[in-house]
Amino acid sequence: TTLGQTLQRYDDLSEHITVEYVDPTVNPSFHTQYTDSSISMSSLIVVSDKRSKVIDYSDIYESTIDYETYTSTTTGYDGEGQITSAIDYVTSDDMPQMYMTEGHGELTLSSTFTSGLTKENVEYETINLMDYEAVPEDASSLFINAPASDFNSDDKDKVIAYLEKGGNVVIVLPYDGENMPNLDEILSYMGLSVADGLVVEQNKQNYYQNPFYLLPDMSYSIYTSGVSSNYYVFAPFSRGIRIVDEEAEGMSYSSFMTTSDQAFSKTELTNASDVAKGENDIDGPFAI
Image (cartoon, rainbow, N blue to C red; front, side):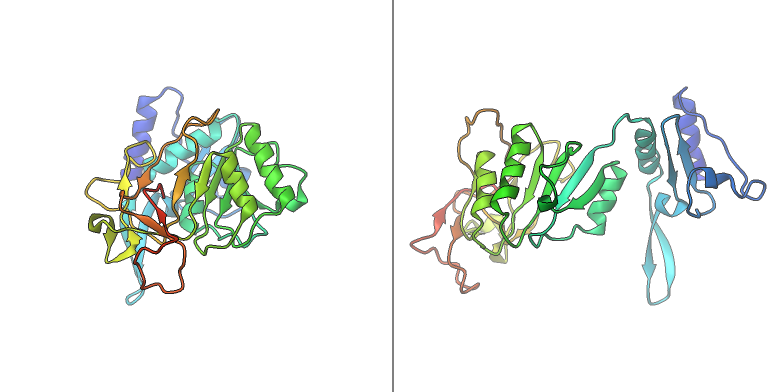
């Protein structure tokens, strides 16, 4: 089988990896020393002297379901990705820990995103900063996902104190234009500012059908290397990000997605069909 061939390649290429097969009809309780859950036939268990990880057979082959006929079709094979992820998990000394804030109307992360975190062996937990004196010491990163309301002053200070210690903060900006001075202060510490309103693109090469539906220019980096030059990134209803001080101490900046020089941020959004530039609108270009 394809999976068997993949396992044989791992075994052949590394003296640190040994592949063993266990017949569940002969030893039906073998898996219980590694997991309390039931697992599918042909599943894998990756084991080291540190820990173990179960790879269920259903995660190795990707499939789609036709709900008209209720038939399942195999659409992809992720054996190598799942096995490599598991080997990394069982051999790493420390697992990265991500904390995601709540209490400000933050958006819930999609199952696709959390599955990606799991595959990258990132442990994640949702916390309310009001319950903590500081961002937890074991935090590898703090994720603030599009809050609907502002942080209070104490929580803002906790985030800045975490940044001062070299912490990593990921902020997804909300797009409803709510005034959030404490979130703005966190961004200011990072040397960034966000223009009021939403970005309107006037260069026809940089939007799709509607000037709010941006097609940003992409810069090449390890973060964008998976985006082929044959495809567009579609970014509707974006906020305009500005770097306040390119020479800010301890900071370096890379803008992965940018507007054209013709873009501006529309500050009054009472009429979504009005894309004409107004007197109080803010000139671009922006990172988004």
